[in-house]
Length: 101
Image (cartoon, rainbow, N blue to C red; front, side, top):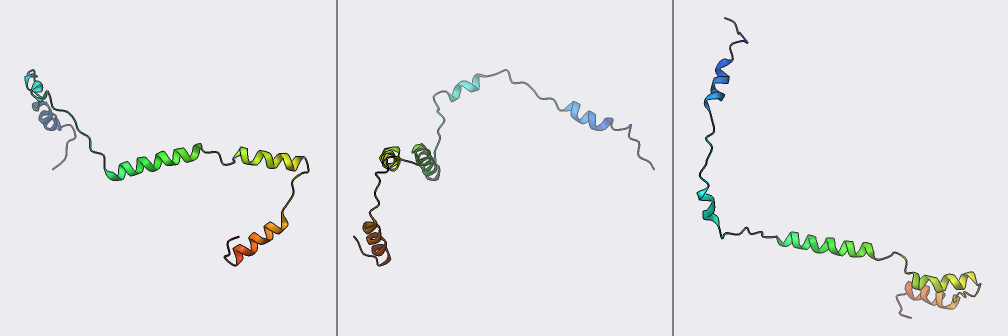
């Protein structure tokens, strides 16, 4: 008993016998006229969209506020910037002891 690879015509015959009939009647397609597709967006998807919009808005905000930094830079460049050592010490102590200054 042996196996002959040349005798696989039976498989090809199965494929040839299965033909797809084409539909020429498209009359049934007009019956769905008037129906509209609907999409439902989940609460999680809406929340995700809101978070993504907030993240995009946060990316557009500059890390450094130039309107605050520019006057300080000018005073540093002109040697007119003065450090309030008493104010710094008061804030350090207030933070250490949880006191509002």
